[in-house]
Image (cartoon, rainbow, N blue to C red; front, side, top):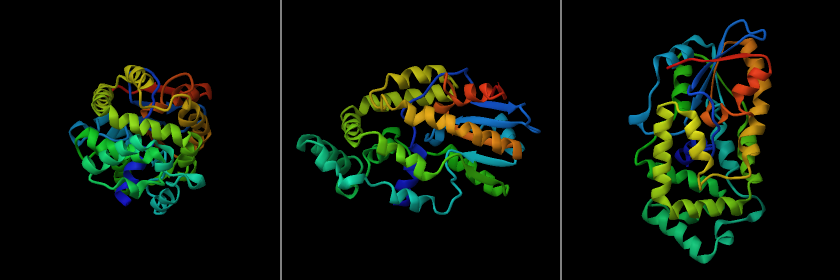
Length: 284
């Protein structure tokens, strides 16, 4: 179960992206900051062969006094809280929501491809079941930038903090109708080759730091939750700005969040600039 929940955490927001200049690493200064802080866009899971920490990223992390992620990965209660919030509300189950034919599609996939009994996850929010598919789609045991950063921070005895709580993040998937999530799950299984190709392309664009093109592909994806961009991205971005400012004033901080949050009119970069900070790309 811990392995499942860890994967869910690192995968939680992989469903949409917005464009910005082609850089993943940014320096944040000005507006009363005594020392610069850094902002880095992650991809939440990636195969080890594609994983890379460039020298500028390593230097920026080393120069910072603390690490800030979307969630506090150093919190010993994180997994327990996640487990408590995986279930759908109102006694809803996957079997109740899906037609007999669609449920059979999910059941067969979990049995034949994942070697799991889908009944074990019948009360889970469907996006959790979607997250289980990514290891199969990637064809590897993925790595996580967030976990790597956390381990590095712990080694250097640096504080790890979260920009939001587990409850805040998991509650997003109570706002997105469970039926919509279940439909996306079935579509993802039935279009496995397309989903694999799309995710592979996103990884390649991420490696080349082509955030703008990543946005275009993600926005056109059949597997995102269209209509819920404000819940997934915009509202969270706005909420983070005051937290980023407060933490950066107290300590030089390395902020690492999903690349989806960086760009666009309502992205973190634009919002930080609007709040008076200087945000400059660091070319890797």
